Length: 620
Image 1 (cartoon, rainbow, N blue to C red):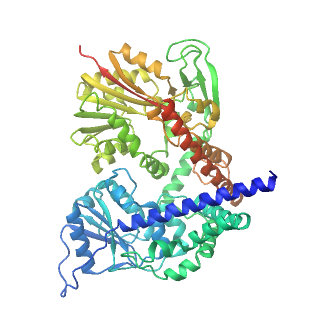
Image 2 (cartoon, rainbow, N blue to C red):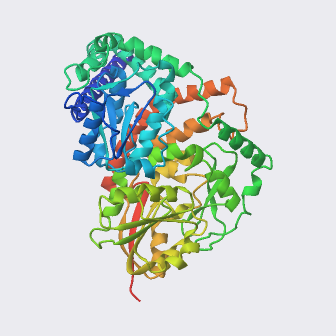
């Protein structure tokens, strides 16, 4: 077979895959659209009525809702047990409607307590209780569609299983503003540059398929071109403005929109003054160098005290791109892997800052909000052994696990402990009942014997002294109580294959990575009986190849606009970062496929990139 024949055959397979993906996406969009209820107002109400008690209507600029629509939305909310209703305009333009349907599954997101809030960005009906708990000010309306998109993400957190969506025929909205498209994508937690690069790559792929595999290429192109009409044409409820025109011009509009987004400079952040202050603070800290953030190197293993550990890995900060280099060493005797030299407390504060909160808060929340299946699997691990009544989640961050675990154990009291301020926000949302902020060993005395379940999910590897954390768990657990721990598995084959680009190394945050056998021995020494250990079931689906691509792309072109960046944020550096992210798009697609295969293999062989362990504290 000649090279030309092989190339044509590959192109046909790619075109067939494109047809399959576009077809599946079209069917999915139709199904999601059918799941959106349509408000049916009873008709005009005549004389104006007093404001609707118990509800607040929040609209973006230029949006108007008649009284019949508002009262119909309130009636729908009461019938369905909702506290937040996102009103989707029936006359929303086709691409905005399709974009919403890609992100929003009305059925699944209603019951998925951790799913990020998505909406049309035009109008929200909010109950008094959620309005109050979220600290909203009725006198300060949203300044833009992007503000409303950010708001629905927040309100979904305060009403995790009581947020719904409905098509509102009586809602009038202004036409979309292309100049604000990138800002609105960022408000949804999506990277405009990467999405635009992916769209351009998709259009280029369609052209290549048309040339090299005309039949399949024509089918893929026709399906893409006609998708708005196929999804929205005969639909119940939405009546997009200019549907025929937008369908006919779709490829050209997609091309021009992607190029416009790539050419648009990044908008100033909403907190521009805060960003200036943040940059000044980082500049002052970095003026003294990063050596002061490290303790002296230790000559032995912190787990078993064996001498002369071997260097396993050296890496810069590929997560945020902050200055500094980090070394992981491996004990030749017990296999414990640890950061050496270890960060000081000031160093930890520096490298954690703006990761889970501050600048990185939205990104962290987006990632943590997509792990509902993992959270439920963790909670389900206890089912054969006990019924938890009082559960403390240590290192809870914003308590996403506790929020999801309530669907498995609805009668359990969930409390959370963490160093960050987010633990208090989790209590305000109702994701946990009680919030504790501080170090677990420091708080263990006052919590002694209060809990029948303690969990540590991807927490122990972050701590400076894992033994002190396990001793604290012994104190806090009542006799017969259960300890659930999940950790990265340092013996994962992917760790050796991917080197510094294996995401679970997670430098500089991970201080200790212990093999499961080491942890089991430490627990037995503290009076625990190990009940179950899971490896394949604990595998993190996108933690290997997808994570490696993200780390590699970030390492090649760190964000020059980050406040800790030590290089000038020139147009050339910004363009280089955009180019690297664009070139990474096909790599992300390949990584997703590899991770899917890796997950199947991990489940089948019971060997993944993480492990989960359940132990019981024995009586006496």
